[in-house]
Image 1 (cartoon, rainbow, N blue to C red):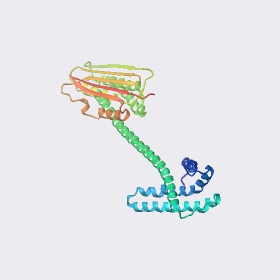
Image 2: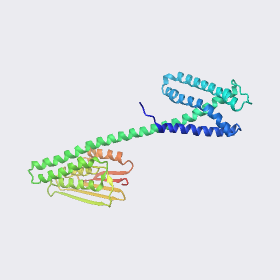
Image 3: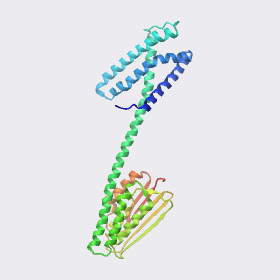
Length: 344
């Protein structure tokens, strides 16, 4: 059995109480009668108005959504108002006035009286229906926004589900290269990979992590990558994070660094240079990655899922709060990102 929604019941009772007092006050002014008498008169006919209003709410309005029942909708609406008007006139002509104003002779079949009765009923139903429709409209908007949030969160989860294996796959490739070379650094690489995997599997479960943690995983990744290369690779890393630092979505910056190694050091035959700078001040993150590229190398943003996923995540997490510039010229590829982070 469905439990009663007492909050909703309280709202309905409050509406009818407010309506009763307000309509009694207006009736006393327009009819030039005592407020107490107007209140009694309104109390007597209020049950008729309540019955008509809820009949319209729960039976007639649902028919409005079914286009095949337009004639039934119109017919029932007219019938409901006719029956309610007859009940209204019965209460006033045979109960209220004979008890409280016996000196007044109110005929039951009085055409102007029926017009006023129908108008009074219409105003009551219109006021209640307007409030209900406004409430339904806002609930519908809230429901749509909830569906949109769930859709965006599902898309974000999908993008992260793509990014994490993509990152681990690239890291395992680095480990494979060292193993093939039978490098003495293989054990160190495995230890670094273990730290990175722990971060990806556990720390990245949170929707936000400290910028300092993201910076640390970038530095660990750089150290892991440097094990693959000899002196032909030069990497500079600069960091400036104010205390206390802000928070950022996990693994949002690392793909830019991955990209610099993939299209920089890994794709060049000569000396390779990579520079990374990260600055956080007044909750504004400035991040820049620059790497050398071979002449004729395709722009890094034109292939792979890494940067495409990052750009989509930025759209979802930081809409209208980030600036991303990707440019390639004179043998150098540069990615610049500025993000206005949320206040912690």
